[in-house]
Length: 358
Image 1 (cartoon, rainbow, N blue to C red):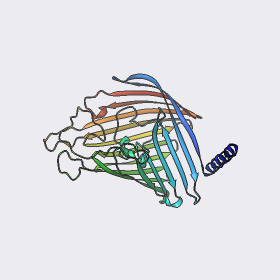
Image 2: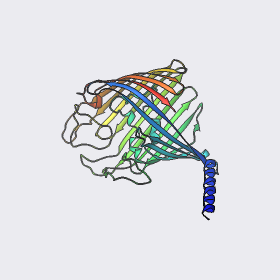
Image 3: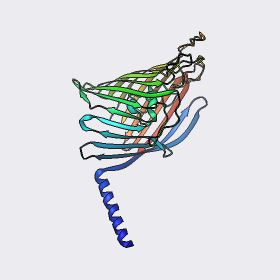
Image 4: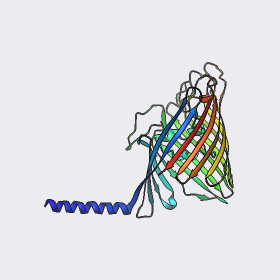
């Protein structure tokens, strides 16, 4: 009897494996990076390495729809982000996940760069902050691309029921902040046959205390950006403007000589980025990026305090060379008034990276 049980269970396991293989597949790939980096001031220099593994699953349903799963891991092989997408043919695509960027993933520092975004080596800027509210778990709908003259228009909308930037798992939710409610965003990208790409994005986060008319109340937050990119042969140029209003006032003004954190500090952050990149050949590319980001305290209405705006400037020269699964990249970046602190020392950064894909 025991032998018969074993035979039956073995046969059942084999049939389940067969069905799973027919329904879809799960693959893994990853990258390994070895980096030498230096930073001025108190940051020092060092040699480091990191790795990431991506699990991708795909399958097709009986009605012709398809499903895709993507999970990224951190260097410590923990969860970096996860999403599951259901593509419904002519009805568009629905994606649910956590820390996956939602709609904003296509609008985060979109000017062309050979290697990294200019926020990589210095404190954050408004363009890199896009969509950070939506990371705790949300849903996104992407409509089918629409034909618009000599191009196509892609539209996506997203919603997070509790937009406080804290990841969730298995449908559970962490402690409610009591400050923020739901978040929603929308983005549109127009891609033309002439090499021009235009994008616009907006997001709003509900402030729970928005009905309380006090100086320290939390009002609805807003962020928005638009960009334009144009490619002609080996040359690409890009321009982007971004606006972030965290929402709320503060009973105390934030001095110009104090570090400000986007998403936490009250006030308005606005920045402009532009860049040019050149593909020397199929393997080698270079780029130059410049960014100007301004913090406006909006003053302290109650106390009548007037605070000067602070401009954080960033620029970068980058180069990247690819050969099969290996890429050698480097940049030299500088940032003045980092952290929107008018007293902060300028940061100069250099990085050389060897990346291997497997």
